[in-house]
Image (cartoon, rainbow, N blue to C red; front, side, top):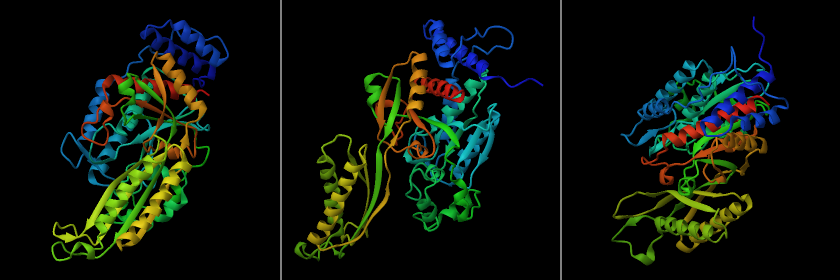
Length: 472
């Protein structure tokens, strides 16, 4: 029976891969080899001869695009848009598709109680914390087909790339498809990764949460084949040392990389997000019969608060503070009826947690004052979540930079202002993110687009980052 490859041979394999890539990029592969020698602490062999690694370090861009297009067909809205909401039939079909690819790659596939999907390539020392990667495939209504998906299918292509190149991992490598990164159905973003991070408040709230059709979380999960008891939610919680590192590949969802002509973004921090729900209740009435001085209009209260959100954000003094009123609903919703109720959902983000919290407090004070001025009741002002920012771990950032340099790819260190599962994985593992450009910064809309070349660059950086971290 052949013995397990030792660490030195694995590093030789990685050195060979890097030499192959550097040569393809017009580099002297001796430079890559010298870099690996410094990393390894010994002189690397050439990698030639019988049993040596394959020189094929080529991303199957056509196959990756085909998979992205096939996954986009599992949608509740017509192409080119994608709508794929948690635990719906289309979501179940997408899950089956992802598990099929994992099985084709020879990964060990499992699911947890809420449907986070894991595909593991076991390393020679499986007792060590694995190196993980992944993202999500659920999609908000009428969005695009690249958000999240690049981080799942691209991660699987990175695994395939390493396998084709005869890389031998020491630490296991694992691809995760997270459940419900988008808050579409239950108003909870990053539901799967929040639970994996061990957030007890979420586990408790899922006992009572319902969607807009009054379907409970447990019933929705059951309809998708996850017959969970709510006490099972604790089984999703991860132990602190479950992973030695987590890296997420993602489209930027902003215009910076494309505008500056830079192919790779290395994320150093993820902004601190918060979500608010606000309800006003006033007196309805006929739009013609009730004179203006006698009105207590819940709709105008909501409109005034929406403008106050903008005002407080702009007054924060930082361009990094952003606020959005993404939902504003009026009841009864008739053109000839004065709104008796209004409902707002507000998103506030900043890389500075205190500055963000100061804005939230100003919004609360404005809501209180508006209710008094307009004679309406502020029936609810609820902070749904108020998460801290997350910093990328230096060891993961260093590995991503190392990979980009070996690939001769220019990169930019940057902040992510969008929510990602990495925000919560950072609570249980050293974390990092790789961004690739997206066309005009479009995201969450059908025009969302990432080029095959940019996706291939991201896959290669991810593959080399995982390979390097796997050997540590």
